[in-house]
Length: 290
Image (spheres, rainbow, N blue to C red):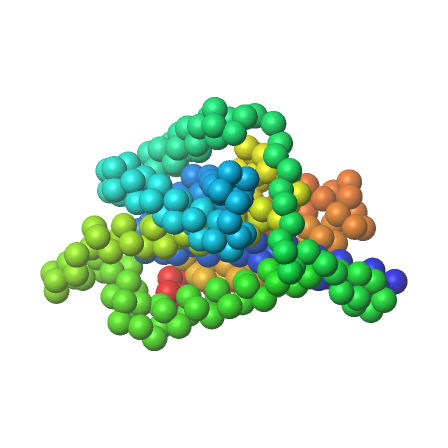
């Protein structure tokens, strides 16, 4: 029983780190730009498909393909923010959601046109494809690697946003964009950079998911964005600390639900979100902490 519990916890933590990578970019974009980007999951999907394509047709190392996939998504994110989202910053939330949802549909259809509507098998990563024994049972090395990547990304974001000059500028612009513009900050350019950073975080998760998920599908972006939205809501809109804790909770909850309550697996995250919203509507951490 102890072996099973430990491995369920480890599986939940590794799954939670993928959710965290997507949710971190989502909450960063909302905290600074005040835009709920429903298309954020599409960046995750594009990161995975671009990394796979590089592996399949160029044949270089997985890590180089990972970087190429991330750079490709960053370029897409630049055009999305510069030529689409920038036009709806001052409009009501409903217009932002409609625009970002239409972007989801466009990207889904583009993926189907380029890669087909079927599932694509994902490869393993040399050096990280084995397993190690933990409390008497084998556990994938790649999952342990992902469990290390998530906290490292969280630490990097904290250092960047709290300790760097750019981080101070971003936090100042998030708090009062008019005042930041008055003192010489090029707020539109800054917003583009923040959006690209958020897209990069999602693409990083998607590219790293290639050896993890087993199959790439056009619906993988929608699947993870649902969990990411739940994480952002229960963690507190705009809170990176809340997003990290929320991702851990959701990852563990999904893992335990799949193992012990499979009939309620799909509903557990929404039950948790409902309980948190009833108890603390502003989420674990209220306000923008970046």
